[in-house]
Structure formats: C-alpha cells, structure tokens
Image (cartoon, rainbow, N blue to C red; front, side):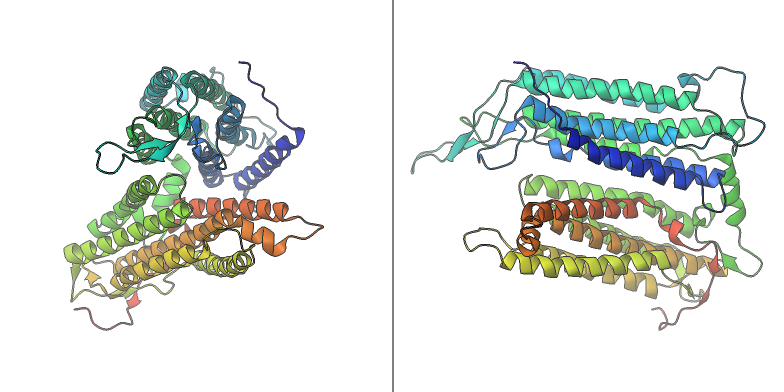
Length: 552
C-alpha cells in the first residue's frame, strides 16, 4: 500500500532552530573569543562536532518499531509513515551536524590565501581500517534487514496460562506488522545513511584550507573529521540492525512468550569499539601538550596533561579512565534488558547503576594504585584545589535542580485526580540518587587516605588524587543532571496538573517539562564524556602534606 508521509510545516521549526543554534555554537568554538582560530580551537571544534553528532543520532525512540503492543494505549510505531519519521530524524540529524561542522569553519581573512595545487580526494584523508570496518557494519546491518523482510506478521494476543493441572507454555504478548513493511523503512534509512555519509565525506575532502593550520595539519584535520563521522554512522547502522533484530526475534504470541534478541548486544559492542577508536591529534596541539606537561622549576605539576607522565602510577590512572566507559555501559545495558522497554523507572535505575559501577571502578583503581605503588614513608601530597571550580559548580547546580524537580513533582503527583493510577515517580529517583551518593563515599575516602606514591616528583601524588576526586565529582554532577532530566520526562503529567491554567494549558507544560528533561539528560551525557583533566587548571600547586591522619 502507498505510504502517506505528511510533515506539518511547524515540524520543521524545531530542527531549523536547532541547526541555527548548533551552527552558532560551533562558530563560537572554532573562533575562540579573544584568541581567534588556533590549532586548539580547531581541535575543540571537531570534538564538539563529534559529541553533538553522536547525541543527535540516538534511535531510542524507534527501538520498538514494527511492534504492535498488547495494550492499545501504549505508544507504538506501526504505520510505515510513523516509522520513517522516527528513523529519518536521527539519521538526518547526525549527518546534518557533521555537515554543519564543515560549513562552520571560518573563511580566509588573510590577503594571501593558502591553497594547494593537488586535487583533494576522499581516499587521500580516509582512515582505511575504520572505513572497511564501517563498510562491514553496513553490510551486516543490510543482511539483518533482509532477514527481517522474510518474517510474517502476528496479531497481539492476551496472556493465557495452561489450565490447572496441565503443562505447557504461557502464551500471549505483543504482535508485529509485516516484515516487508519494516524492512522497507529500515532499508530506506540505511540507504539514506550511506548516501549521506558519502556526501559528507566528499564535503570534508573539499573543505578549503584553514589559515591557522599548515598543510599537514589541514590533511590531518580532514582525517579526524572523517574518523568521527564514520564512528557515528557505524553506531547508527548497528542501531538499525538492533531494531531489525528486536522485530525478527519476537515469537508468535500464540506459541510462546519467551524470546531474546542477541542482535541487541551488537550496538553496545560497536559503540565500545568505536569509542576506543580515537582519532589522531593535530601536531600543534600535541606539541603544546608536551610543552605544558613538564613540571615547572617551582614544583608545579600540570594536571591537564597527566597522560604525558611516564610514571607507572600515572599510566595506571590514565588507563583507568578508558575502562570507566566499559564499567558504565556493560552493567547499564544488562539492567536495561532486565527491566524491559516499558518499565517507567528504567531510566532512573539504569543511570544509577551506571554511576555506581563507575564509582566502584574508581575505588578499585585507588586500591590497586596504593597496593602497587604506595608506601608509608612516601610523601602524601594533597592538592590545594582538590576539585575544579567548574565541576564543583556543575555538581551544586545539579543538586539544586534535582531538589527543585523532586519537590515540584511530588506536589504535582499529589494533585493528580483520584482516579489516576500513577505511581510516585520522585521516590525511585530520590532513592537511586541517595544510593549513588553513598557509593561515592568509599571512593572519596580511598583517594583521601591512601599511602603516598613512591616517586621523586613531589607533585605527582597530589595530581593523581586531584584526578580521582574530579572524576568522582564529575560522575556525581552527571548523575544529578540525568536524574533530574529523567524525572521531568517520566513525570511530566505532574507538571501539567501543577502549572496548567486556562491561558497556558497543561499539555504545554507537559511538553515543556519533557523538553527540559531531554536537555538535562543531554547535558549529563556531554559532561560525562568530557575528559576530566580538561576541568583542571593549567598548573596546580603540586603538593602539600595531606591534612589527614597517617596512612596505615
């Protein structure tokens, strides 16, 4: 049957405003106020392009595409037009952000324009191994979508157990649409993603030279941009395959209710691999890091560039940062599968579990650091500024926001009509946040009380403690923002009842609360992805004796 795809004109206003805002942000980053374009600002610009593009690529809203829920009141994506809309926005969003990243670079301002005589081609800057990996992911996703096309439709069936005294499986559950309809939508999204990727790669290769960079750094910048683009589209292609697998593995509700989606683990694996596939750095930024990473004659250690330190304790601390992502993603994904996609508290529980696992990993790192490199006679340094002001401010703001959201939500939920069967959403949020705060106490005490590191550099031990404390505060600030955002999204009806008036209807307040919740969740994700040493000062007083009791 023909697909009727209608897009109201007002539906384009939001994406248009978002595009203008992203373009303005990227222009502000690449043209640093007071400094102009430099290798550092260009490096920050391409990083923000990758982060924003990844945030815009989420397919969570289309995870259950093609599934017909048993409860007709449950929101679903059954019509091909609705499925296409849900898939088109993430695909177009991630590609559009990377295209805006290329268009937001400043034009030539010097009287003499920097140019090269050679023809720039895509393959000259393309990271070959990553490109082949991305091609393989696209091929596997296409094969999964083709498998989906061969599946038949099922109608939802109410749950029913065998009669008393008889054996047999429990039947019933959700249904699904015809596999050809979903496969057509997923295939169209995959083709759009592939075509858009080639177009953005061509745009990257044709971008004009930047005056702030030399010829070698200009070529390397194109490689970095292609690296971030390919990593993002790989996760999107894997997400399309997971949607197809979620559909194809659903059993006939008239036969059984048991099912499992092994393809759902593929995006997690792909996300972790792409997260480890870091792009290279510009030569100007590397040289700056090496120069600023040296200790000054006054005994001050640069916390930002601790990764340049060769001491085994510093190497262990820096390496732990890469493992924190795995400590968060793996348990969070497992809990998400256990809770299911319809549990109202899944976002609260998943974010709390992820944060707690990260804090436990930080605690394990401190214990391992003390066991391998600590000694009682060693000087126990303590940073003069344990936590960066920016992180401390973010944590305080997150705490205040969460407190206000919990209080307002509790009042709004109490004002709901008597017949409304809605469980209080603020209670799980408060309990989960308190559990994360309790988990942070052992990690903080371990960083404060552990023995000093055996080293000739007096500032190293203080720098390692500062990194650990900043990591703890960063995860606490992120989880506070995430919990406040999740509560705004899940309990937006309470805000409509509390603030709704005749001039401003309750529906508008509900939509505004949900939108604010998504903004807070995005801010939490961005905060958790920023390298913790970026919040530290350029150099900090290395060591003063820790004002704590002697280590045991």
